[in-house]
Image (cartoon, rainbow, N blue to C red; front, top):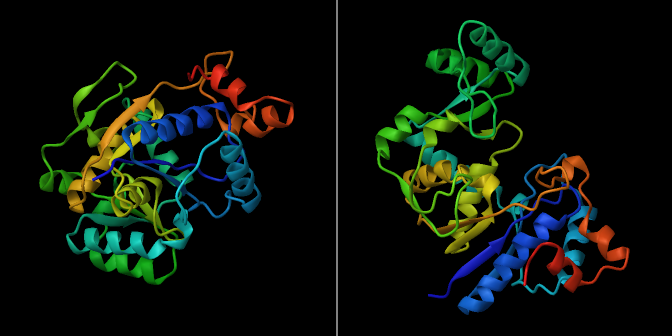
Length: 289
């Protein structure tokens, strides 16, 4: 079977040099392996994802010289796939609804941190304290029927009982130089959110489902997602999905040593293009030969 690579950006802003580097890595790896290169649009965030950003993204990638298979998979068109996965997890008692707002969760964490340090995930966010686990089935149903907002969380303790031994094949390296066979540590993330009332999926769930349905064999992405692989391996095991090979690459940093981000208004690829830069210039700037 041919190797299948993918580049999966979100159209919630303009692509920057970091995106260009990751896209070029995937495209080139697919070419060298005689495999396939897919473009996927991760647009589950309806509030932030805009058609104008998607249009600009396709323009920029085409200008770089990338070619991809069509039709392009857009997550917003496949919500039924994610609902089906949630139903499988629910049937095994592996997910539960939590009804606290983000503000309420932050308040509960602050109360606990006043007494002792509270664990945080690899991204620095505090773990969910787990108060909703103590709700009775009757109270959960009452809150659901009342129309209260909720998040569907993975019960990590139950999930790990079904998948006690997890690792992945790392062909790149993690932030600490991790490579080869890497033990998965989903405990570092706690009871992650897999969906919300208004959005029947999350990044973690949709990326795992999409990769499996599209037959992705090689996931090449930035080191900022290295430890997210622990959650992805757990979901793959629970849903009986294949595990791709992983290759996490270095990040393109700004002059202050921070990773480029749309939220910090990193120089957009299209800005460089409209200012006269060439695809060769972009390749050189990101250190891609």
